[in-house]
Amino acid sequence: MVRMTREEFETAVEDAIDEVPDELLDLIDNCVILVEDEPEGEDKDLLGLYDGVALTERGDLWGGALPDRILIYMNPTLRMCRSKDEVRDEVAITVVHEIAHHFGISDERLHDLGWD
Image (cartoon, rainbow, N blue to C red; front, side):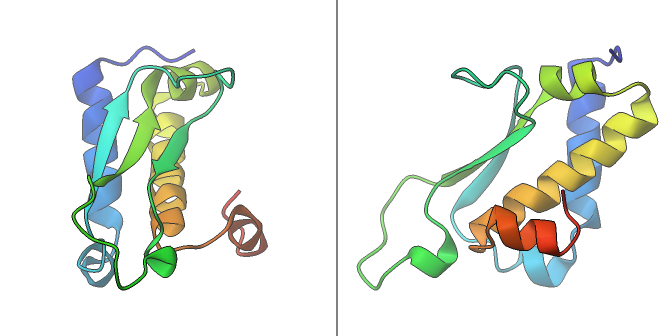
């Protein structure tokens, strides 16, 4: 398990977001990215979660909804990694993975693309 402050972890998330091309970030619509300590539910090893309606599933009547959320879970990430560099790498992968879900890209397609 890696020891990291909340501030260090949030910086890793911010750095990961900064690595996403601006052209993609500009297309993200009504979505916030948040850091949480632990996932809710039974899967305590979950690193991230997209909670919302993918852009590809929003119809003409979609609107006025609360923002979608991308949740990046700090403690499971710290538990699975062995170094701060590994945490930063895993956070970057998780951020891209969850942003992909916002664009309607499935886990299967991400696997095919090498984003496990």
